[in-house]
Image (cartoon, rainbow, N blue to C red; front, side, top):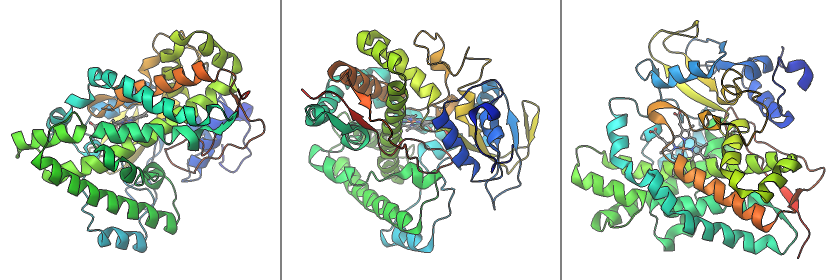
Length: 428
Ligand code: HEM
C-alpha cells in the first residue's frame, strides 16, 4: 500500500484489526523511509536507513524469526542499537566536544565476546529479588506524586506523574545520592526520541547539553564512589566489580553505565505506563475490571506491554550474509525489526489484538527484547508498572480520559508514548 494513501483501519488490515492510535504511529514510522504501512502492520521489517549500507527490505511473518535474529549474535551485531538515526548537526557535535564527551558503547550496544562477561559483572542489582525489595520505596514515591494531584479532580498523568515518578526511582536505583537526585533528573530530557526521532537542531543541542552535563556528573560520582563504593545501587555494585577486577571492566564503561541506564530505565517505563493507561482507560470495562480485582494487574501490565509497546522497533546490523524466514539479509544491512508487529503474531497469541487478562502466554511478548541482551531492568520495570496501576485503580477508580483531547506522538522510528494524558475524576 503506498504510504501517502489515506489511512483506514479496515483497508490496511489483513486479519488483525489494530488500534487506531498504534496505526498513527506506524504511519509516522513509514514516513522515515519507503516502507509502506502494509509492511509495518503485517510483518517484521528489514530495512536500511537512508545513506547507509545496502538497502534490503522484506517482511518476516513470525516472532520466531525475530528471536532468531536476536539470538544469532555472530550474524547480527547490536552496535547500531542506540545510534541516532538523524545525524548530529555540527552545533550538537560542538556541544558534546565542549563538554569533553567521550563516546563509549553502552551494554546494549556491545557484541560478544565482550558483552556477556560484562553483563554478568553488573547483573546482581538487577535481579528480580532486588527489584522486589524496591517495592516499598516505589510505592512511597508513586504515592507522593499521586497525593499532589488526587484532590484536584484532574491531571495530566504524563507531566504530573508518569514522567516524574519512574525517573526518581530509576535515579535512586542507580545509586545516585539523594542530595543529587534533583540535579540528575534535569538530565532526563528525552534520549529515546533523540535516538530514533527527527529532532530539530535546537533539540539536538539541548539533548547534547544534557548528555554532556550528565557525563560530567557521572564522572565525578564514579570518582567519589571509588573512594567509598558501599551501598546497594547499580553504580556502587559496578564500581566494586571494577575494583575486584580492573581488567574486566573498562573504567569509562562505569561512566557510560551511569548515563545510559537513566534513559533505559526511565523513559521506557514512563512511556509504557502512559501507553498502558491510555489503552486501559480507552476500554472502560477493562479499567473497571482492574479496579474491582487488583489481582488482574500483573496480567494487565504484560498485555499493555505487548499490545502498546513503547519501543515499537528494535535494531541490529547484519554482519554476515544470512537467511531468516526465507529472507536473504546481506552483510551490511541495517535491520529494523517490528516489535509491535511481532507482539501481534497470531501464531503465538490467539486473537492478538484482544486485551486478555487471562492470556497464559502474555509474557512471551517482545517488548523487553530477547536473548543475550534481554532487558536487565525488566523486573524493576514490572514492579514500577504494577505499583502505578495498583495505586491509580485503588485511589482514583473513577478516573476517565478527558473527552476530545488529541493524543500527540513525537514522530519516531521506535519510541512511542503520548506527550500528555488528560484525565479527570470526581474531586473529593
Ligand atoms: C517498560 C520498561 C522497559 C522497556 C520496554 C525496556 C526495553 C528494553 C529492550 C527492548 C532491551 C533490549 C534492546 C536490544 O536488544 O536491542 C532492553 C535492554 C536493556 N534495558 Fe530495558 N527496558 C525497560 C526498562 C528498563 C529498566 C527499568 C532498566 C534499568 C533499571 C533497563 C535497563 C536495560 C539495560 C541495562 C539493557 C541492556 C541489556 C544488555 O544489553 O545486556 N531497562 N530494554
